[in-house]
Image (tube, rainbow, N blue to C red; front, top):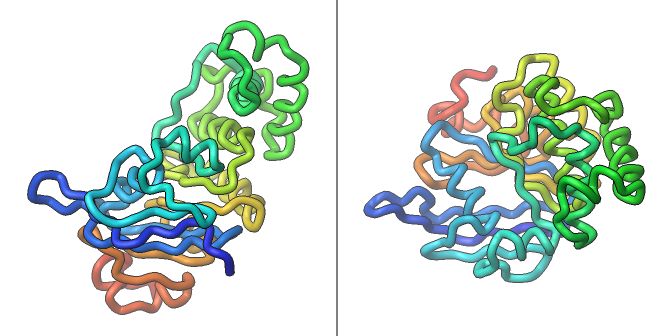
Amino acid sequence: MTTMLKAEGLVKRFGGLAANDGVSLDVAEGSIHGLIGPNGAGKSTAINLLSGEAKPDEGSVTFAGSDITALPPHARAERGLQRSYQVASLFHEFTALDHVALALQTRAGHSFRFFTAARRDASLRDPARTRLAALGLEGLAERRIADIAHGERRQVELAMVLATDPTMLLLDEPMAGMGRTEREAMVTTLGALKGKVTILLVEHDMDVVFALADIITVMVKGQPIATGDPASIRADAAVRTAYLGDMA
C-alpha cells in the first residue's frame, strides 16, 4: 500500500529526558493506524512532532512523498495534514452549523469576519449543512454548542476538520470524556471514514482502537515496541506485558 505519512527516527528531548527516542511510523494511505501506549509513553509528543507543533531533535517526517520536517503546522494543514485536539475549542454561543461554515470559510480563503459572513452566507451555510448531514449530525445544526453534550461537541469538531477536506487526520484522544453511547456514535462516524481519509488515531479506549484500526503501533517509554494488525498486537507477549495485560 502507498505510504501517506512516514516518520523516521524521531527524537525529542526535554532536558535529559527523551520523550521520543527513535520513533518510526509508516501510515498507509486510506488506513486507520492506531497509536497506543501507557501514560508517559510519548504519544502526545509524537503527535506534536507529526503536526509540526514541535520540532524534532533528530529524524524526519514525510507526508505524501514530501519532506515536511521543517514545515510549521499551518503549512502542513494546507497540504492536507490536519489535527484534532483532546479538548475542543469551540464558541459556546455559536451553533454547530456556524462552526462548520467557519471551517469552510477558512478553507476557501475568505476574510475572517467570523461574526458576519459565515453566519449569513448561503454559499457557506448550505454546504455546511450538507457536511453535517453526511456525518449524521443534521439534528445539531441549529443548536448552540453550549446546549449540546460533550460527545456531540467532539463530533462537531470532527465535522469542522473534515470540512477542510484533509488528506489525513491526526486524532488525539477523540473519545476523551465520552460516555458509552457517545463513543459508539463516534466509532460509527470514524468507521465510515475508513478508506476515504487516512487517520492516525491516538486513543486510550482499547475497544475503540481494536474495533477501528487496520494497524496498531504500541509505544512504551518513548519508543515503539510493536507494530502489526490488531490480532498480532493482541497476541504479542511484549505488548501484553508492557501495556495491555491479559486480553485473551
